[in-house]
Image (cartoon, rainbow, N blue to C red; front, side, top):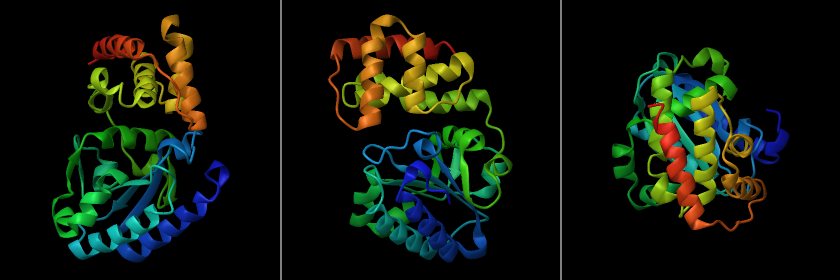
Length: 258
């Protein structure tokens, strides 16, 4: 693949694809990259590698274990936030179901669970995930096929209703969580409202820039600080009371579209 702004992580993705081909064999349908890596704002200091692996049928526990061991090993060489990957059946990519079933999931946040109890992880890390509606929407419009047919052909349409419910699920507690991770919620709330108002599918950085030109001036310093932190990886200072006010304002605006 073309490395572009991914730098050395392009080689890691190439290796990841080769390992998936080895592990899943003929059961592998496609591998798709989404998130900051395809939206022009990848930064190894605060980005992860977002991947969807599509398979043609159910996968055995042995295959899951091989996949997890490979992913955990490669996660050590990934950007700061690691690899986030979901394994889903190709049939649910083409004919969307909400909330979307998944066969297996991994992120840096689940690493300790896997290391502590791999058998339990393999048995229980499956089900449905509302976040996949948002991921599939981005993949269809801006994603990149690392293996398999193009993303626009592999993924069906996600309804506006399901997409909005999915992104609401991610930000509904922003009033309480924004103090813990202000950059994430400031940018995410802005890109969610950009979709609600104008049906724009934006990255976090693009969402922050949209907000700076569309939202009340009193929030400009929050948005500028969040965009700066996202681009540089250097923590910024945020006014906690203003951030709470921003979350209340944004949730009210976004909630009107539900």
